[in-house]
Amino acid sequence: MAFIDAFRAVNYLVGTPRFTWSLISTEGSEQVSSNGLGISTIALKDMDRDAVDLVIVSSSWTPELYGDDGMFSALRYWSRRKVTLGALDTGAFILAQAGLLQNRSATVHYEHLDAFIELYPETISSEQLCVFDGDRISCAGGNAAVDFALHIIVATVGELHANAAARYVFHQHLRPISTSQSPSSPEPLGLDAPSSVRSAIALMERHLENPLTLVELCSKVGISQRQLARLFKDYVGKSPVQYYRDIRLDRARGLVTQTALPLSQVAVASGFSNIVHFNRTYRLRFGLPPKRDRVEGRVPFEFRAWPQHRV
Image (cartoon, rainbow, N blue to C red; front, side, top):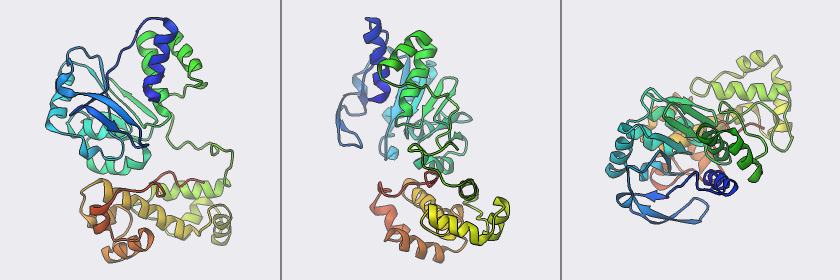
């Protein structure tokens, strides 16, 4: 809705329908979004596929449920017609599965980024809020969908209309396309950990598959082990070792529940060389072993994958 509303604002302010849109799903009928709201759609087979300039795919938590032959056929048809294909949140999974992001840049929500990188190595994965790569565009979702829409408006009808729409929906600062999903600026509420803690966390996040030792970490940050432990206790609520282990396990859970990668490969990708140790620590953190977690569930809201562990 955030994405569509910017286009609605342009139409309202101009007084003519500069943009029109349709909400499509494979079968049509009502689709329930992740916040529980129902969205009415029309069936893919009932739309005029030639009356399209831009197609945006959105699939939320479970993109693997929505890709099918009919959807892929339609996306490839639009690709041949040089229609701009885009994605919100995890929609890039579907474009990639359809073979439409090979050697292209794309972004997904940070929670799914690790899985996307593992599943589609032929796509150039980005941590930016938005990516514009020719006729392939993508957005991480959330409130960034407004920025995404406004950049599209700039490119199609100009800055005048984009500025008016931004003011109308109270989006008072249009973020550049290159804005990172995980900026180094202070947290939104103004709370911020010391630079040494933030530097240590950034190093941990860059070395999930091949973890640094605590000695190496402290050496790179330029702080003693005792001082780093004290700062982590004060600002993070756990030791550096515990924190490092937990973000590796959270990455593992994303790969367990969002991909079909062998669990041994998931363990290695998360910095665990011993599968027995991986299974044991995974169960201690999440309450069930990875094999069962893959069958029974998705990542619940209380667990968030890298890199949202910043403090």
